[in-house]
Structure formats: C-alpha cells, structure tokens
Length: 152
Image (cartoon, rainbow, N blue to C red; front, side, top):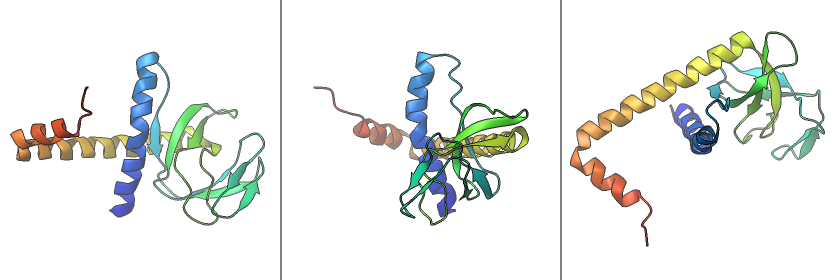
C-alpha cells in the first residue's frame, strides 16, 4: 500500500506541469503510466545517464532494472514498429535501477496495460477524494481554502 501511495503521489506531482502543458496545446501527448510488471529495459538516452545511487554511468544500449509500478511518461512512438517510447519519470532509490528520465521502448501492449493501471489508480484516488469531501462537508472547503496561496 505504501509503495502504491508513494507511486501515486509521484505521478500526481507530474500532473500539475502536465496540466500546464495541456493548456498550451490541446494534444500535447503527455501521459503517465505505471509499469504492470518489473522488467529490465535498454537505455536509449544519447550519451547515457548517470546512476547516482550506484555512482556509475550507464551508456546508451546498456540495461537497467525497473520495478513494478514504476512511473513512466509517454514520449511518442518507438523506433521499432509496435513500440512506444517512454521515459522513467521518478528518481531511482535502489541499486541496479534505472536513472531518472531514462528513455526506453515498451511494446504497445505493455504500454496499454501500464496506462490502464494508471487510469485505474487515478479513478480510485478521485473516488477517495470525493468520499472525503462528502464526509467533511463544509470543513473540506475551509481546509482547502486555507491551503490556497494568499493574494496580497
């Protein structure tokens, strides 16, 4: 439960910038997803990426490991047919893992499953927030108003 909540919080932190980007362009293509299973992926970043936890650099074409529920962001279509190019959108906290912003390809089927997992959790979170609003009633408005930035 803790890892699911942590993953959801990380993913939701990307929604604010994503919303701003969407306001700029109606079809920006910004989508977040949770990997449906753990997997080793091939790094596609030009020049490689530095893995802070392991204090080493991974070159383009080397493999790294992502755990189930890792947050990924769609970049666009992959170079290979039937693939989607994605970017790891969370910091690496374990040895052997992929560095932040690692680009790699997922099969379209894996990406579709990952996107469905994200949408399911987003819907679940929205329902929980709606339930809290109902339970708190006027207190919800009072609490959320006090959290808004004050205008001078």
